[in-house]
Each structure stands twice: as structure tokens, then as C-alpha cells.
Length: 116
Image (cartoon, rainbow, N blue to C red; front, side, top):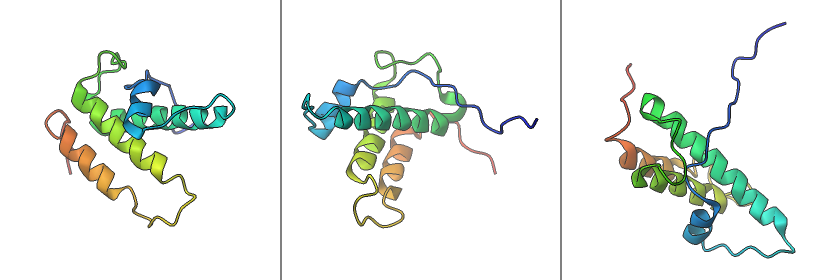
């Protein structure tokens, strides 16, 4: 049996669902739980993406109450982009390039630079 190349281990999200709701101006309606589920998934994915981007500067113990505000801003930036473009619009293939540029600018002081 071949070992998987990547094993996903969930880490705590870096922002609360309420923080994402406020940033996106999303109001949940009890008759539409799928909207809350979608945003919950996007927040987890954005948190994971920011943690991966930070590489060794990521602190696995960070939570939504202990992550630095600049890290939370990066998560919310990605979440807002991914919420807006869920694949059901005609966004260009590189629709998230601007969001990643913002993330890079936000996190450049705390991220270990990649070595070529």
C-alpha cells in the first residue's frame, strides 16, 4: 500500500464565522443553512491557505482569538474573494490573483521568504 502524499490535519480557523459574516455583509436565514455551510467551508479553506502560505511562521496554536490581526485580515481577504467567485460566475481564470497579492503584502513581514 502506498502512503498518501498529503495528509490533511485540520487546524483551528483563524477567524470566526461572525467575523466573516460582518466582512461580507452576509445574513444567515434559518431556512437556508447551506449558505452558512458554504461560508463555514470557505473560512476553513482560507485559514488553511494562509497557514500554508506562512510556512514556518505559522503558529499551529493560533485560533480566532489569538491570531495576529494582520493574519486575520489575510484570511478575510481570501474568504471575500472566494465567496464572491464560487465558480458560478464568469470570472477570469486568475480571478484570485489580486487577493493573493493583498495577502502577500499583508503577510510579507511575518512570512519566511521562500528560497529558490
